[in-house]
Length: 125
Image 1 (cartoon, helix red, strand yellow):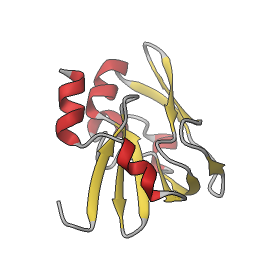
Image 2 (tube, helix red, strand yellow):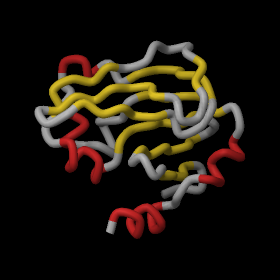
Image 3 (cartoon, helix red, strand yellow):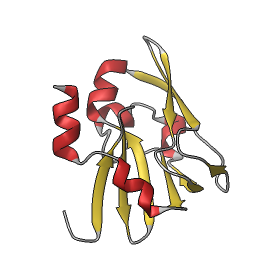
């Protein structure tokens, strides 16, 4: 991991990777394992302003539907359009090609309230 890229985790099993001022958000490997095979992902609209904790995305699996929450305040910049036709990308690469949206961050201080990888692993152990 370079100094320009840091990944944080939430108690709700989202990850947020910040690179050069833009954050990419998705669900963790653990979350996708709990959900099972995803069949649908409802993504937000680019340009939407969001507050930390807002339910922003719905992921539906064969087991259940689950909300994905904004980990910080900001504005949605782009969404992973590939998930419209291939929601299973989240299952095969939850913390890679299965990212959900990118956003600008209104208050980078909010990142301090999130977990690093070690703390997240301990929280799910």
